[in-house]
Length: 87
Image 1 (cartoon, rainbow, N blue to C red):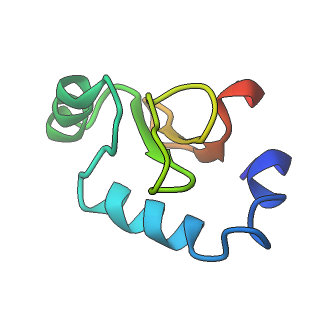
Image 2: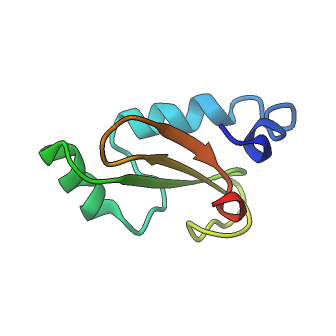
């Protein structure tokens, strides 16, 4: 995880577990890449990008404020939790 996500842990202690649990179930949150993610999982190739609200009670567009991204690289070597501004 990036420093921005790490700094959220005290404020939102369940954030990481909530988002990772959804991610491992194939729930891509509010990501615009849903179909691409499903294809990447089926084929075993391609990047996976999911987007989740940091505070579920607030709006989240999948980018910008109140958003946590989880990205798995196409070669499956790394999965990173980051804020969009850290990309």
